[in-house]
Amino acid sequence: MLYIIVAFLSVLADQIIKWWTVSHIELYETTFNNPILSLTHIRNSGAAWSILEGKMWFFIIVTLIALTILPYILYKNKDQTKWLTIGLSLIIGGTIGNFIDRVRLGYVVDMFQVEFFNFPIFNFADVSLVIGVVCIFIYILFFEDKKKEEI
Image 1 (cartoon, rainbow, N blue to C red):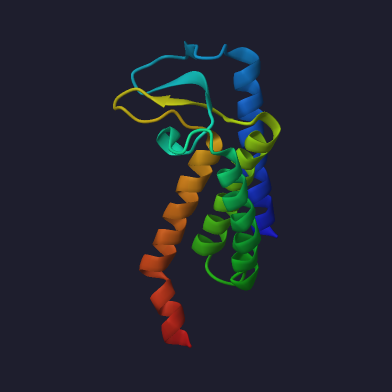
Image 2: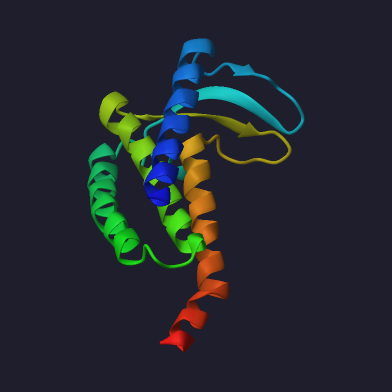
């Protein structure tokens, strides 16, 4: 049940932040500018760094495949450590958050801009995806072998 809540909250937070951004920041406008992080409203029709820009059908197909496989993996491993289940839940939530934009708008709304080094502008769904991947790496590095030893 926890993993459903984590995925849902990830999608909800992502969509609220995107709604607020579109409602309060003009396209390509930067606000809350400081030396660490600012908000810049952009539209991204690709993946990170605008890779495969305009290839919306590719992203929709890959997302549908991921949203078929990831919940199955989560269900099969629901009794594993929280590092794995929360990691998968965050990846599912982030995937759904960006998928909603792609289907509804034809692009993904991005807004977080790191100011102290050159990095692509991103959104909360991307943050969920990255944190989810980090959680899974922690699981693989520190917990997966222990589960195998118990078997």
